[in-house]
Image (tube, rainbow, N blue to C red; front, side, top):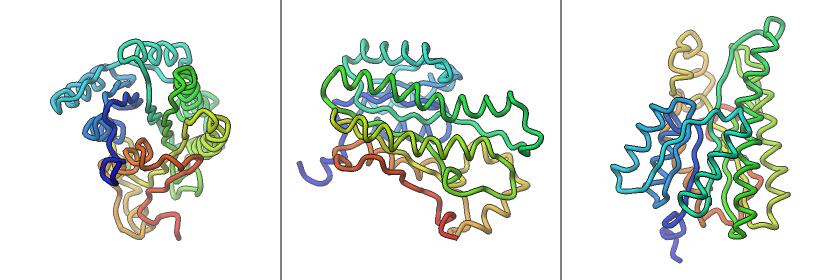
Length: 255
């Protein structure tokens, strides 16, 4: 296998959560461009279907799933359906996430639990279901979780303690699963984006000037700038990388 071939995903099947928009959609399309069949999962079934149709337009197989990632039973069901549909699951990109900006002293139990359920618990549910399928198949696999630079630094000026705590936990969960599943030839890694121009950040215009000032590159990332990292970690080129958190933040955490 030459260098370029080592980035190909021909014959692989990938499941992407939060794939209806933003980073998830871009990376689902990128995995398809690299040769994978893609199961597109999102809480919004309409956007999931839109991504699946875009993948089919590339000439790659795709199927849309409406999925609430905070339900472990629903996650298990979708993974089982993916394995039934394609016969195997090789790549899981656990990307769904939310953020609630509320001061800690004013944050409600409901707000805290909503963020933790989506940003941390769902990553465990999705990783566990994918890991079980990959272990049963006995052919290894790739699991990639979306963490955040917020798992390493404290964002400012906006308050978001629940998000920061959940993303820090995702990084450590990734490392733990990497060690447990290495004997099964399953690699588990995470990406940690910095400020990225998605629907979750575009509306927060009152903080944009601060974010740009504190990012050495002076701007937010585009969702497309996450594609290379995800395809790399999903590919044979990253076969000896596991337990790693790849920070993609334009230098923000350097300062």
